[in-house]
Image 1 (cartoon, rainbow, N blue to C red):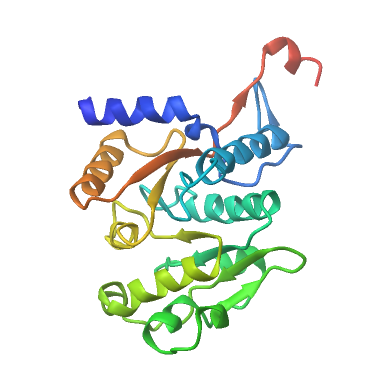
Image 2 (cartoon, helix red, strand yellow; image 1 turned 120 degrees about the vertical axis):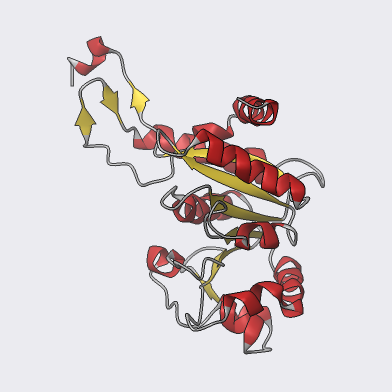
Length: 247
């Protein structure tokens, strides 16, 4: 195991960012010796939000990219729920942006229209960025959906307007969370990561390959992208056998 990965792994343990669950937990689903505990998962997600976004003073990042290491690591769910948690814990505005144009899903998660959004803001329409944001009813949470699926991703990611739009997002909203494609498959997360305060990497429990995660971490280092921390998704919580017998 490389020293770089050992350092990364230890840092994750120190900040407890590995402990977040990334998919909705079914409290009724019980397997022998293992329980997915909804309340515990929620508590850990709150800790993630407080650790990363609610630091005192000017230390907390205002804009963060969420990305998985590999396909199916659960970064979209983590990003969406972090946005929900954060908006519930702070008075300011929170915006979640679906920049995963390869496999957009946040509009479905929030039950919103996904046809008009991020791609349109960067490539087509010069309207103010808030024009593309949809407010989640009864909250201070806003969502910028992926937008046009016909967008040329290479042009979008290398466009000068991308940087301008990112600055506009941070100027309009107090916190901005951006969902990006898997970092081991596409350069999107690294390119977006250079325009924000940092990246949170999502790894899937018992699935994400250690070597792949190490290479992603090194690619971020090479691109001078700040890795804020990591989240371990789809984690199960073991319970003692004596407690299982009482269920």
